[in-house]
Length: 248
Image 1 (tube, rainbow, N blue to C red):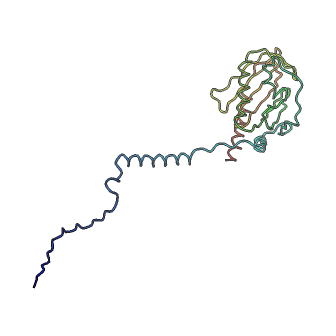
Image 2: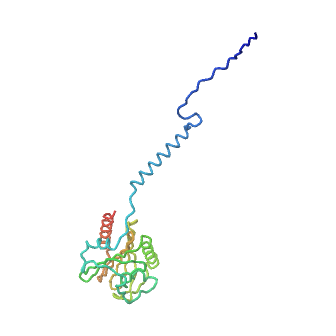
Image 3: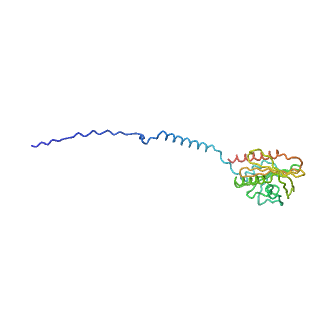
């Protein structure tokens, strides 16, 4: 009888499986990476905070807004809308012609080419007269261009002998009215003074998408004192800012 012996060989013992939880060593963020992540988060939070509290851009003026601005003025005939199509230009001209833009909107009653419409009023004060009016433009850039144009003309015409060939006909020396340094909003002023002392004083300011003029006819001798005119313009700016605040 043949005997068959079974031979068994010992197999190596299997290693137990180990379950790892979390990131492996290779995928863990380095210390530098963590710092970068924190910096990015902080920057995002700071940006959101700035955006939240950044002042909103002031709204542009509509015609009804301007009417609201002038509702507080008690002029001789109240405030009226200036319609480019319905306004009549004054016949006349200014010499030298290079200085004419300084008197187009006032003496010659000619609206700026880019103006849409406007609102104005005036006062009769004994022998003097004061008109105040504001033209509205499509945007701030157009208003700034009109104001910059006048600034350039004034720079070239300051101390020039100017002749006004339109009512009130005048000729005299054109001088600049001192403004407060770094005035806000931007403003300019100038006066044409005749030999007899008659003064044609103009004050101009740009605000948002508007440009405003104050024109004063003062047929009295003596030096021109701009304090009253400046107070009128300051009042106008206060009115405009109040109306803007209501639109925010």
